[in-house]
Length: 267
Image 1 (tube, one colour):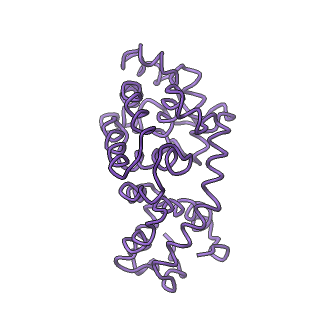
Image 2 (cartoon, one colour; image 1 turned 90 degrees about the vertical axis):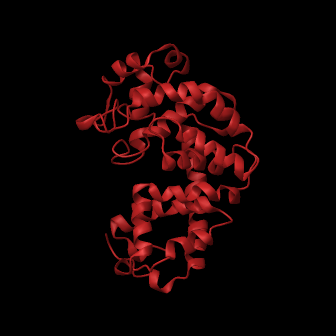
Image 3 (cartoon, one colour; image 1 turned 135 degrees about the vertical axis):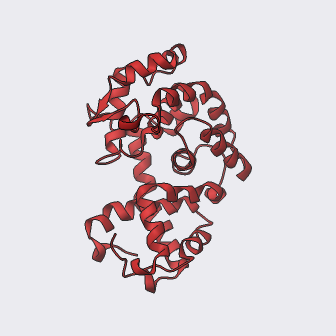
């Protein structure tokens, strides 16, 4: 991992301000446009359980290895081999069908699904015992989507956000980071629920679990990489007005750090 030579000259306040500005300039509007293009507008997600079910299933797949080489490999409905289209063609994004199917029937269908070389029945096909069993994930989402939707539409407070995050984490294969991403997409970016972005602080820190963000969490704390002890916590402390802006580290690592575009980075 490359050292960031700009970090030593930046205060936590400056880093946080940079994240908030760039997150809003480069990510929020773009993600809304992409989600709407894939059929996941705020209106559809808030009114149609089938659409919300489909969305949450795709969020569960929005992780390694399925998001290689990029997240489009999961979401892009114009890509014949995307996770989206592979599941759709096999009826695995149809809420009514999944509710009537057994976990074994879902497993049978998933074992026929390969998206960009990745088998969709398990996140670790070489050792299925330790991998996520997606038949179980999809079935549990179908069983809990009514509760998830009701909680999502009635968000009014920090405690409601925490409650939603915990409910999502009870679903097999959806842990803290995936649950936080779902909340970032639906609540922060698409604006579902009645909460201010500042109220998302209790779950935002879990975004550091994402691979690109993990790299930045380490960089912030490691002096050999440009950071200093305690810097990540200090940055998060200064993100209170828009804590989900922490996810701009994802864009920063993906588009700048990993491509050696340090001179173009505005940090």
